[in-house]
Figure: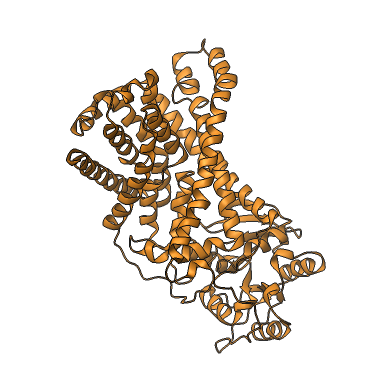
Length: 548
């Protein structure tokens, strides 16, 4: 006989249905851990209920979608012990029949939770009674963001004693409630809605990246002087191999710290921005408004979130791409690798342009990344798949984000970075340190020199090109000698060098993550395509510079 401690309950519902808020309240506002649900390969946020039962918050189902997260969520719900079906009371007439059809949960122990009751004018008793009688399971109507006390205890007990779901012979037709429907907003304006959405996107992502860059720039010299230099001095007696691994240019302590210093503040601030946008409903409104433009390059509007998250950390962005549709995920990952200048790349590029005396080059540099990244995605990714036919879409509510909810989301993103991204960074640091110690890096730099000469760039910069493959901030070695090499170059040469080194390939950390998510075949094919686009676009810009 199964005990509560050995059972797993899963929250299943459409995106923006209130599942995360319900998870927080039921588990005591704990962030939980991101892990695979028992007996499946789907990653979900896991927590433990006061009853001892494990509760998993599955990825939200998207309508007309065949994403990995949607497919995995539906499969996992069928395999779990108990399914907690979460449906907005304001949209139950459309959402409940679709969710039941998609989940195929007939005969499974289940509980139905109708959320967003704060948006209902009047009583939900008729709707609750209809669902309870037709489905044969406990049904609750509540505000997930304000669940507490007796209402919470009753729901916990109902989950523990859940009855088997009885699928009706005929299609459900839940009675509608008098609801406060989502109101129109600026992003839906037929003329300037997309422009407003684009401006809001810039504010949500550019401002956190800039603030994080300023913070890291301020903190780095302090840490160098007070922490790293003393550690280097204390390890001077160790063998050369140990020094290379620990405190060399790619050491676990030196470069490992820089990995944290330049990425973590961006991840936290971007996580804060995205959390506010998600909790307020702003994210869905913005991405829906930009969907038309994104489809022209082979992506969907909501694929924009992983792409923009890549400006903080490409690894975290690749993980987030799991929510992309199957027909656009590879295109999204490809665009992340080409366009999304991570925090290291942004910091290195700004530093190099400033050292060369041309900081204004950063603006055309970002424009070139966006333009050629869009063309790259459009040219190489034209596959089309049939989406999961759920056929329903509705606007989300705009509401004030709760402080505890935002904190919960930011803490979850931070845990994901520390537990998933940082181990990969440290592994790459170890690999690079061994390559440098063995002299392989110098050999590769010599081999790369002809590529630079092809674009009329100095061969002395070849080491930076090779190092940028391992790490995008490897470009910073061009600052040696107080940037004398950069200062001797023309502005066009500096621009071409930084662009080529940034786009020739994704860094090794990103490629390794892509290999884990999508396999070696796609990772190697993506790298080859990106190299072709980078070389061709670099040649095109060089030709333009000559004509000008």
